[in-house]
Image (cartoon, rainbow, N blue to C red; front, top):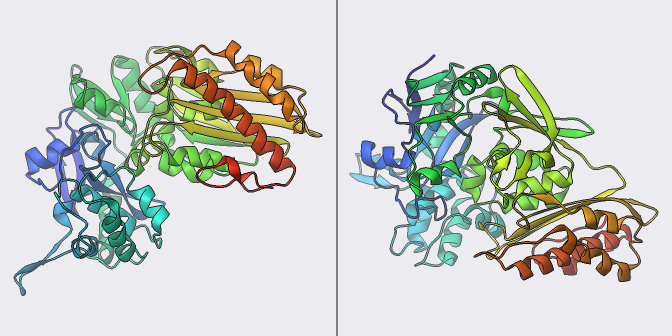
Length: 497
């Protein structure tokens, strides 16, 4: 069992054996290293000023992703490469100057910076897009920068700089020595369990489910961390001291995605970014909801398993997966069990998870040929915002009639919850008889008594929930009739099949 964290800093090995469980990557960079180009803004993963690029191997190839260093724990960097804005420019002794990175150069020439506080994070987000091997357009750039806030310059010159520099052809020094960096990362992947500390206080990063189960059985009071997009805020905003942390990011079994003609199985440690492509094969709406979960930085770190395990009533993935009739696997020691995902959520803040038991994987059935799916997210901001409510609908249709309905909402109760009265009210409805839809929508008042809070009033939530059901029925009826129905979408169009 290894007792030190190893990572690459701009290609050079760093090994630390004095890593505190709660130490963030941002604090390490600024306070220990003195690399102060990376800024601290919100401290909760929203503003993007602290964005850095993390290099890791995906299918043997080096890939860079932007993350929020303010809520990433230092121990989670084991086996990764860290690139910050301090590393981008290249010294030229002959010229006695610094050669700017192409992204930095474009930002400078297009006047993409004013106060400059947010600029390092923006540059690092664009650095990862620069290395993504895609020719960026305005939509991909907007997605990439949704988690980087600028209150001074405005986005037009920033986007102009991105359009010029992110052409899909990386020609910087990081591209030139990518194989060297890849080889070094391969050497860091020693498959050893990591444990720094003692039984009273530690950071652990097991390399197998066997070790994970053993440590968690022994320390059921430890906090399991996947992407830290939630737990990171416990540290930075709630100022909680978490003496025992178990990071699951190095458990190979929990990073796997398998699929066949009938279902997709996703390990609890799979990030949204890595799950999006395969989940999009179920339905485009699944991919669109994932695109609107947090930001690029959040999706690169946050996991579907973590979103389920923390039990939030406004988590975006549980309603989707409940509507799709997903199954959840839990493990304690050598014993595992599988339950319906909807049964995992018992009450607000209470889940069906025994002491020492952890979420291991999620099994998601694919749609049958006679099933249609729709899902919608309602939030105050379109991008990077927490849901006021999220609705997911799976309808089985035979000869133009709904024979079965499976509907789930988030944000309407203390847990993600199915709308069972509404499901029954929809059975037998003719999709062509739109005059019957409103009566079915009224059944939602029997299923939910939502609360009012800062995101939405109870009245708004119930009326929005009804409207989304009508919208889904409208789109699906148009789909079955071979019509577009694009008047229902602000962003994107559902093509008829």
